[in-house]
Image (tube, rainbow, N blue to C red; front, side):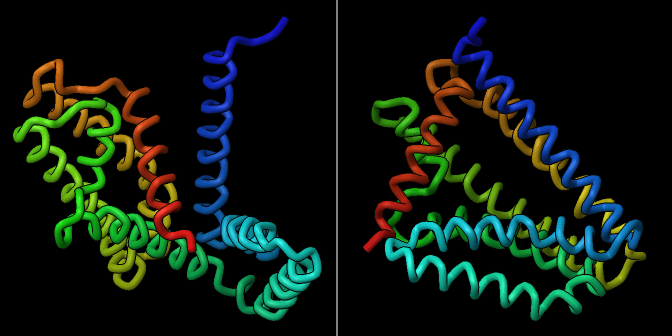
Length: 223
């Protein structure tokens, strides 16, 4: 019995959610010092190693690819004693770095004469010219997401510096995803209130448009 495309997509989404929840729980306990320092550090560096691995794999020359893999392994081995003793700091750097990167990604589209990111997504999703009201709304939403990511990064740093480590860990590792979901839901409810039905794309249309917009952005940066 074969699964339909929608069922397979739903299963992949559930698996991804389960993986994110498991990783968040492991990050929380690792940041609090529970368990093996080596396992906690390995879980902590896994996203960074995965990203570096993808970058190395994109190298065309097999010899250069091998050198890149050896360089990543050597760097990891050199840093390992420090990483296993500073697991919480490792998660802090990841948490702040990812949120700052997303804040910059959204915020820079608000500068100059460029098109705000959410406006671009809406234009692709609607496949027609946007009304002035829709353009104003999407610009405001882009600014709201920018503020959200910078606020999360700032709060994470302040809690790490001023609050007990357990309090920071709960915020950074356990509350970030619920806060992200709450932001999505809140924006959706507000959109339902201020925009007419013909100016509200479906969630599936928005996801497809976001992928298209990010792919366009990556293509524009490619040499």
